[in-house]
Length: 44
Image 1 (spheres, rainbow, N blue to C red):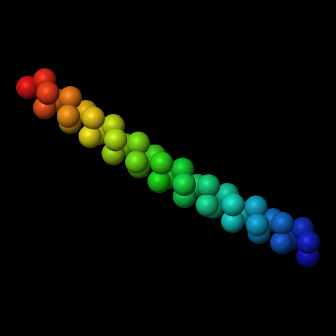
Image 2: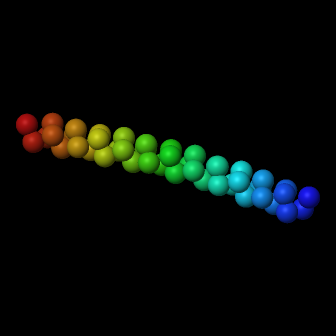
């Protein structure tokens, strides 16, 4: 029972981490596309 609780806790933590990673990746993509667009407008 103890090991099962530990495993479920570990899975929950991994799930949260993957959500955070996905959020960070989309945030970085947004930042990169924004900076690229700004640079493009400054060049023109």
